[in-house]
Length: 111
Length: 113
Image (cartoon, rainbow over all chains, first blue to last red; front, side, top):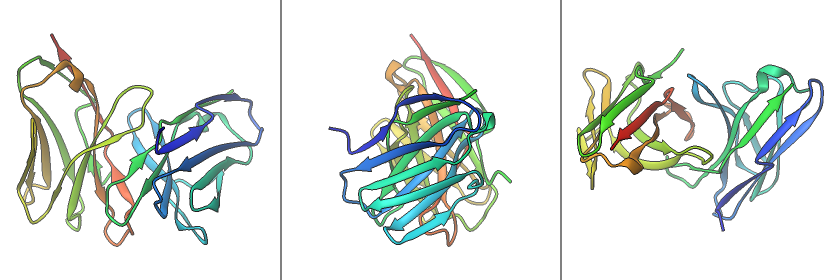
């Protein structure tokens, strides 16, 4: 079984809809992250959390919110989806070092 | 402001030859660098890293070189194999950034038989 899982893997939604992307991990890591990948821009950090009570904005948090329901679960919400949020979204975890472990990604399309 | 830059969006190399992927950075406070490899429909996976106290780190067919004066690092793959075809990202922890990684744009490597 994968250590970091993301659901759904693919999602098509309409402008204005609320959508939640979920991430679960079995690695026992405290740190969790949400990134988005766009062509030509690499991965950009949306939000990160170092434990259940710690939530921090990344470089592109506008239009997104997160919830850390437990050590193993970190959800990303788009309150009112817009077309420029169409992207590939990755969840990642880390222990105390720099190396991060990524989930398989969610491909989100906003029409 | 792109602090970590990969200026080559793509690279094509013949099987068995050396692949060299380049990465430049602007922040002299970066003191650790990582390379990730990404296949389609999968998340990035860690490949190799280097600390700024070193100028070279080798792991099998993969070697990363760091030139601090030029703010440049490169990943060498030799010999290149078809399974090396993927997108490669370089990354660095943001200084005082509590393990936040700053990624380059990625380079798509294609190994031709």
